[in-house]
Image (cartoon, rainbow, N blue to C red; front, side, top):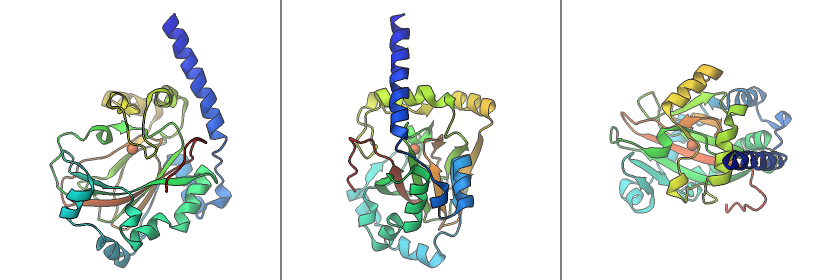
Length: 272
Ligand SMILES: [Fe+2]
């Protein structure tokens, strides 16, 4: 009985915090730079835009990629997945900065998240070695990033086919009552830095789902799995509350710039 009470209390306190937090998140379609794309994002949790960069721009961006030695020295490396993660990627090149400070993306983020949207993390993610993966932890499971509003912009700098580690997304999984328990767990138990790194291994996998749970959700809510394949220069805008996962690199390389957006809680200060 005591457990039931504390469970109910935790759920209610989360519901209270959530409705207070979301008062600061007012999406506004009239501010979107492209209404059709905005509506796709609202409806599916994701929109994909090919040709965001021309091939000449892609080439210029690729010239700014650090070499392997520099990556080994400076990037956070996840050896099993052969994933190199470079933080503060806007500092690497003027081209990258132009992406992270792109006014069109900012308008989109503000239309979707509201005027308090901030870009709080800017990374360069590289998967360079095919078939090295045995298990790549959190990213390999379908998961929601947060209970708070979360929007990401992925810019592919290489062609990404089904074998080239596309982002996988479950369309329309970014809303619904079924999310409540997982969100409450994240709210009460997840511990992370303000850049989103889990700080406690014991709770790092909160927000993740097992394959059989995903199958049940897909059956119940008809969520469609979408592999975000596309040529270099493709921009993917998605709501990272929706269920998504990484996939394995089976050939070539995959290089992507990732801009992370949220609406901070009042006590949170974005460092960028
Ligand atoms: Fe994620």
